[in-house]
Image (cartoon, rainbow, N blue to C red; front, side, top):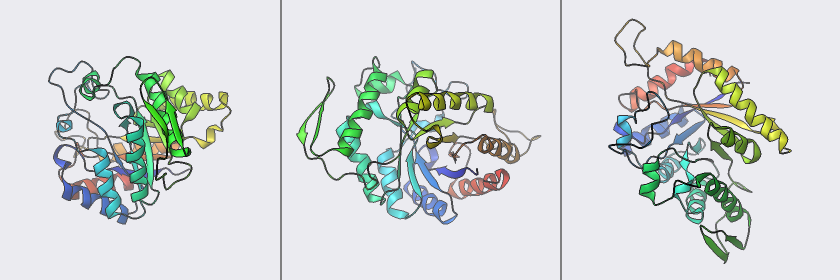
Length: 305
């Protein structure tokens, strides 16, 4: 199986720029990449209560500037016609389900059914506090949000009663362009999160990691799917890769950086492990849109994807 290859859309840091967004979206589609993805950050606290789940635990400096994911995908939908558009990930608990369903449905309609919905719990207590959402009980809230989205997208009339929100019997239109709903992928690495993916999601949103760790977690997802009467082969794995590209093994390079060839080898091995799709977020290593696209092409060639 050959994994598909996508790109992270310009959205944060030096790439929080409308011209960069339009350029990369159009060029990615023209060059044959299969998908474009956005993330969801709200703020960068001066004294964070939680460590960033990557690198050395420090929130990347570039995350101080972050465009709204729904607006970014709407622009991308307007300047492309075929490439898939995904979220990896939206912090679902920040949004009332009725509003979240409306925003996602609108993007699916604007893109003529090209949306891939990726949802997660988030990791920052500070962002939860800023959004006015309690940190405690977040897993139960997440499951209730997923239930509400399913109902809103499926039913007419819609009626949802929950201690967190109350949707009286109502007509809620339009429904998504993709029926019965867009693909829903879930993020997470804990046993409970992986079990949830297997139980109810179309795919698992993973991150680039050592392959033994990736395959072990994927095994947990597949076991959960089987326990819940689902075909594990119908669940996809989509991996976000955030490589820092070095010029050469002997030259001065940022900590954690690797050459194009080294990154390509890892991407190829990841695909051979059974991953269905990989997307490259190059916003922390590229200098401008042209450089980002050149790096993406070099990594595609080095990986053979």
